Amino acid sequence: MHLREPGFFYKETIKSGSLAAAHGGYTAVCAMPNLNPVPDCRENLEVQLKAIRETACIQVVPYGTITVGEKGEELAAYDEIVNDVCAFSDDGRGVQNDEIMREAMKKISTYNKIVAAHCEDNSLLAGGYIHKGEYAKAHGHRGICSESEWKQIERDLQLVKETGVKYHVCHISTKESVALIRKARAEGLDVTCETAPHYLTMNDSMLQEDGRFKMNPPIRSEEDREALIAGILDGTIGMIATDHAPHSAEEKSRGLEKSLMGVVGLETAFPILYTKLVKTGVLSLEKLIELMHTNPRNRFCVGTPLEEGQPASLTVYDLDKEYTINPDDFLSMGRATPFAGEKVFGACRLTMYHGSIAWKDETL
Image (cartoon, rainbow, N blue to C red; front, side):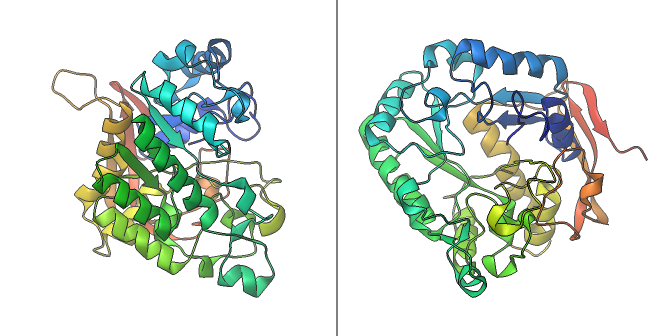
């Protein structure tokens, strides 16, 4: 998820983003590093850590970057930041240079940390901004091909074989990505991945000429969506993340072509998945909890177990509560969601972090 602080306070802050997370039922989140300053050294990371200590209402654990400034040219100062980050990522940008990624993986493997990759081959983008599919063709939009995602995953998996690093793929969206990761896991590589609610519940036929349907990677075909569901069911995809990426109203008001990429998701993830996948019988509730809570906690070593005598971090949902998603009710500063107007079940009523109430429904 993206909390935008430091550097982009007009989009989101650690205070507003962590409160939105609590509103959505999260007690711990991992914050992506595309910030200003970028957390690529101790001095820069400390700016973010100070804001977290002073303003976060739940646990917020930063990512460190793979490269200096997320520019893909020089390795970040891992030794200065390794003890305070959950993993290393240049999220928002794929590392284009093979040798830089190889050296990063070699170095990060010595710390027993995770490389969490945003996989995108820039040479294949061709100016695209939505999926290169039927909607793009019918409406005259430039498309992003699936290969731009899976081709870099393919490269990275070869580098994982060479280096033995722990590897995680962020927000996968294509059927080819699922197949590659399934094969890698069958070969015994230490590889995990995640997808997001919009990729599991939407396809590109559902797009509208509105910036709230624009994110990176894009919503893809029904065939891709079905492959993601299959990957969830067979354990290839072990986690569901939000990729919460708030922007200002103006930045999301420019239509599909010119709006910035990114939608919010902290406050809609659980109800959307519960309504569309659990209540329809695709997943059990226990499986959804595993995907959203247990597996991410174990992989990234965040959160705390719920144990007798320990300060509680927990969430209370009313699974029978039906309501309509209204962005005006969000506590996030971002409002752009493709799920606006959807009727859902599963309202968060209370979130506690470390024994204190982080958020509660005012009607309680």
